[in-house]
Length: 157
Image (cartoon, rainbow, N blue to C red; front, side, top):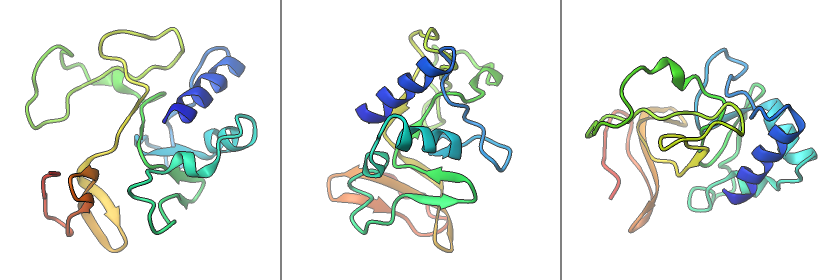
């Protein structure tokens, strides 16, 4: 994650302090996917090795990096360049089991107590694995990576 954070900061340094856009070629944003322009920059200019974009616990079979169209699936949440400003909920509340709102940095000068650049990945009921959808995917459990069956919301341990 450190290598990717440094690469994102380098990207911003080369682009008037703006982080890569979170917008994907399919027309929406998703935190565990990056667009081809960011992927190309990370590989070619920042020299980030592809294995830095994976989660080592989820990449035991060597197939965690997925390229779908021009977008690339990575092994953690890339939280820059996302439209979190549209979520008007207060940032200082406890939302229990519901994902809490945060502030996605658009520029390197965006900072605050609810700003996040990168985060470990735990997807509760929103991942797609093969033909299964609505899969819980948690890479760091006591017994290693854990993935549920389609439609089952198995909590990460």
